[in-house]
Length: 465
Image (cartoon, rainbow, N blue to C red; front, side, top):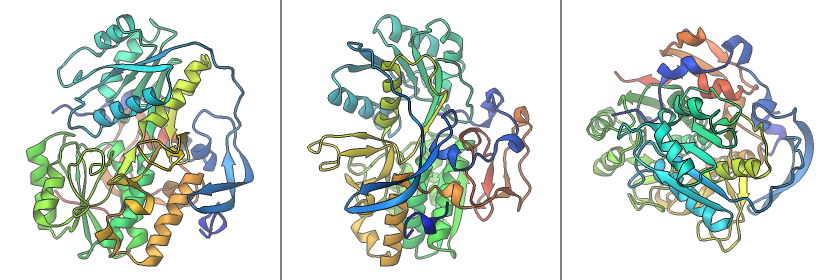
């Protein structure tokens, strides 16, 4: 399916590749390409069917060929109270990661009277045993779903105690390890789809044709992120160059500041980061360049910046992923999907008078959001003036396509190795030599490959050492 016939068309937060030995998957040759069904249906779902359906997105109603998953009818166990116990690796305050996940469960509690939550924060950073944390949440607070917000908060702890509590769902964020059990589900959201849209914006607003990322650790998650961002940049502006420099950790404010300044010294006039402090944003403000946000609406939800600096950001709606799991638990599903990797085409319904995105009746799992505005309106007014009408239409079209489930940047484009990366010996994966077309255009990588095996930087991205 092509775009032409779809529409007019200190401790690491999540382990890097050192944990990849636990990934229970085959070699790349056996599992790189899943076809479009690998995206739309998910790694464990039944084979999808292609139909034509009419869908309204915003003000536009379009009829498109789309791929849907066959679904089963289930009866919800009535009267069941669900309590989510959250083993948070970091702290809630000042965090777009753990903090945004707490906002997610707060919203679910407001929407659904049968839901409640409890949490234990700073578990990894304090060096607390995640098993003890999980047991306390289950025994003392009655948690029947337990979520680990960092990969080290869930692995190996949840593998160890999952059998001890067979009626509890355990959920664990994927860093690069996708190992699972019957009641231990590995979860993530396709943030990369919004990052691709951010790349379109960044490529359109740069004046120096130099864009930079202060990257935390070298890991699958960050290569996936930068790959999608880069694909968007190059589609918007073939003359632009993306420069990356590693910080080494998810949270190291002095180093994040140093790396950000080094990128700006190279002439970068659009900066983003895959780290957890506000230092890259501060550097962008100080140096008078554009900043691109991640994980959460840092302007609207936190007030950490303004649209004079933040050109665009995206919001990760963990409540959509949690609700997906809650429905399975309420239905009494004993064998839920072991990988849940939701994209923009997954959403929860909202009342039109909701306080979070007023007037909107659906909340996609991830979307552009900046200063409490969504879609094209999430682009800073000052930044939008730098973007041509044709490019704004492209950004809107791509967003609508992904909301419909009819486009994914990793399906559309080839993924070509730069020769930079980290081998994963446990999986027999070397870094593909420079120029190797690891994934051709027009086919969709499987979820397990995107989550656990994308171990290389894309060709064309410049690594600053």
